[in-house]
Length: 228
Ligand SMILES: C[S@@+](CC[C@H](N)C(=O)[O-])C[C@H]1O[C@@H](n2cnc3c(N)ncnc32)[C@H](O)[C@@H]1O
Image 1 (cartoon, rainbow, N blue to C red):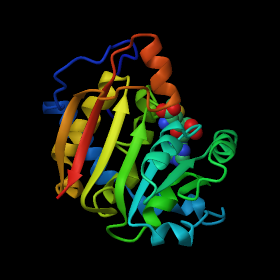
Image 2 (image 1 turned 180 degrees about the vertical axis):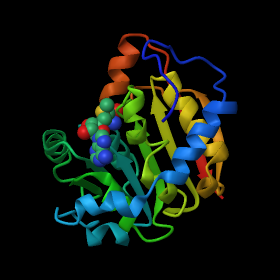
Image 3 (image 1 turned 90 degrees about the vertical axis):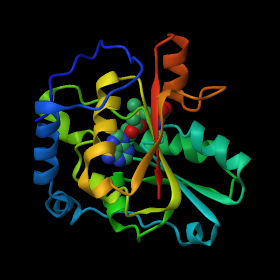
């Protein structure tokens, strides 16, 4: 599955989607991806629900793999009418977000694997979904764990509200290419249009990983998709 990747490749612009055999391999793995089969592993694991209060907000933003939550609590302070849900499967990182967001009513830290949570969301739930610096899963045998191959990818369009924005940022050229390829060719993402694909646009680091990469002067890219 997937194409061999070189973790040393710096992000270069413009980013081009995969074509030819590499694209065919991705398309084959999308056809094989089975979300229901994947979700069976969570049948006996309690998965938290989205807190009821989230639905009372005008706008809802979910940060996938929020880490220590810098983006979540910074943006929550800027946009008090938006609920910011930070999801991470690491209890240590979620606890850090909990500590830092004490007293902020519009921050909702959730400790869970995000996949079953996304799969259960009603249609058109989110105005924003961010994935900052996902784990790259470099080895080809792990390609299916990258979001661009993942079985839950087919849900990404369904859960976004009209004009909702999905943003993925990465320090990995191959990851951005694969994500762009999914945006261009995945049959279930045809309602998502590419708004931007290029160097990260930020005046200050938005997340802890972004801060570390910027400190090391690494080139970083982001892709934003808008739901029609
Ligand atoms: C490389 S870190 C980036 C953290 C943060 N977004 C940042 O930029 O600082 C990736 C994070 O995603 C989380 N993560 C990976 N897969 C996940 C999943 N399926 N569900 C929830 N969290 C996940 C990891 O626990 C980790 O905290």
